[in-house]
Image 1 (tube, one colour):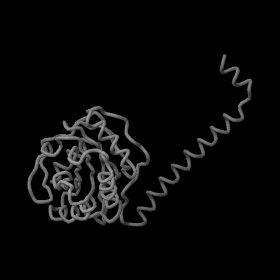
Image 2 (tube, one colour):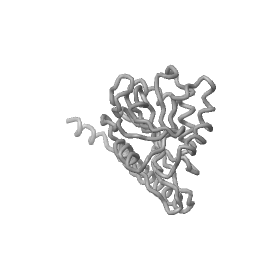
Image 3 (tube, rainbow, N blue to C red):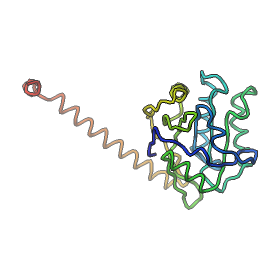
Image 4 (cartoon, rainbow, N blue to C red):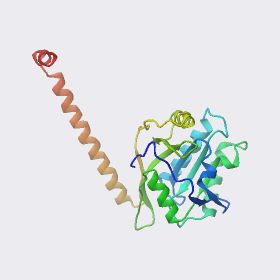
Length: 229
């Protein structure tokens, strides 16, 4: 992720909704909007992203209809029928009173996908087995398409509600960095390589922090007085 808080997404891009209809992004982003890049044929993390999005919507204290959610497939080979199948699995978690147009499931061509993902700083990589490695994130937009905040981790309802309140004001804010998760390839060897890299990186930071703490605790009082001077 390369955060682009305060920037704008291109609202004139055309995508296809789960009913096979062409729709401009500006027709959807007319109120605070939760944008979640996924791909519908994902065997791993995207399922959890969509489930977490549904849970955050269900638990939200904001009035139903006061915001939208958009799930965008960044796989240009995916179809509207695939989006419709996925939609039915997750919108049923929200109850019968949830408006049909409040959560859009989109597909698109490669050009439109690349323009939108580039505008939000979202990168992904296709693997030989057809799966994608990509970060798991939610991008919160104001009604004019301004990027307000990024939400990482499990999309906790409190975090999402705070981001929606800031989006309603149109005021860009610092992102909520609980944990930057990744949707890993289905190949277990590739997944292990990524996890190992994250594990060793965390270990290095932990050791460095521990050394710094020991140094501070062992510092003599005379050192402190010298610093105070």
